[in-house]
Image 1 (cartoon, helix red, strand yellow):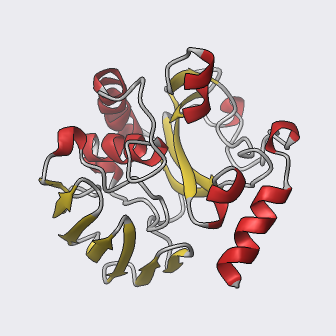
Image 2: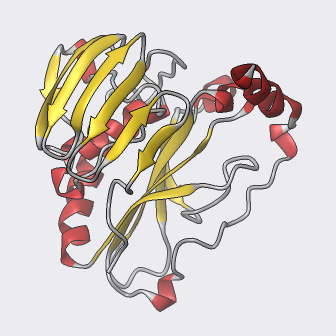
Length: 235
């Protein structure tokens, strides 16, 4: 009944006319001269929002006057555009009516180091023109790929970010998203992850179940992370 209610609520909203304004989470560029990297998650559009979140990355170079937002958006393919977007934008825009949650916020020299790796990962992403809701590749596959390329970011995506377990080129083994562990995956459908900052996770049909011991929390399908934040508040 709970799942049906979530799905019905999501479908009842017309996403085409939904709010896309800033949630006022990110600092204005004029107020933060340091380099900055942020990762956001918000409930997905339509019925998918009952089960999963959409994630994206925002960066601001040192002393830059604006943010750059990177994400994969599947419906762009229907208009003959690449699914991968990389453009100046507000970093904390509501995802078609859904207020985003800030997963990661790092600033200063650490962010500067990560930004160089993020740019390279975006340029090398192999699924720029592909999107599949389940098991991937999708928007969360992209964000997960970037996290793995810049391990100094040091976080993993919420367990309800379906598609995060799709490893590039169907590889069965990879470093975990935090860079502190190892992940085994069978095309994002079955697998397991063990890592210092990842904890222990099991993936079954693309659904993630796990425990984070480093920053204590449960990781559950649908609900996501329950417990401490994946990353501390920014300095």
